[in-house]
Length: 115
Image (tube, rainbow, N blue to C red; front, side, top):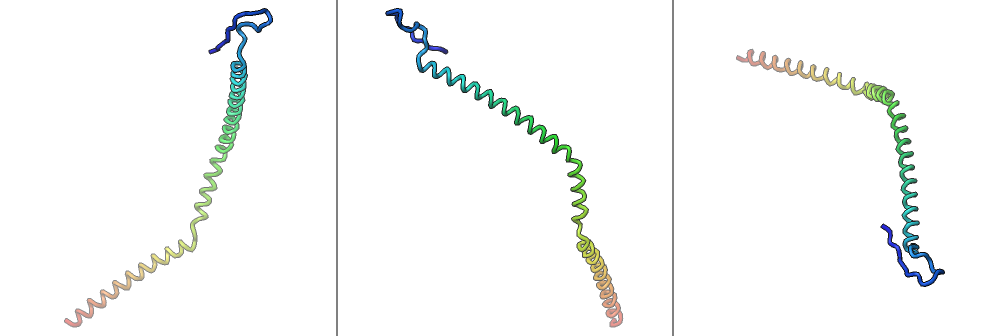
């Protein structure tokens, strides 16, 4: 939308009737500057987008390597002392169960002897 100042022609030395005011010239200059700046922003965003796509592509190439290292880490994370303790606990439970059974058998025998 453009506003123009219309002035009556009093003499031939005056400016043409459709000359833009100072405000309109400044506004047009700022609008052009904003347009150029937005074009630069758009170009920079596109460049950033391409760079990010490249980074993601490189990262995806290492997916299989990461999975392999994760498996290795999980295998190495198993502590042999923990496994040994677990086996000892299992053996201890078996020994305790045998002891309880022997104790019950002795109680049964002593009760039978008393009767």
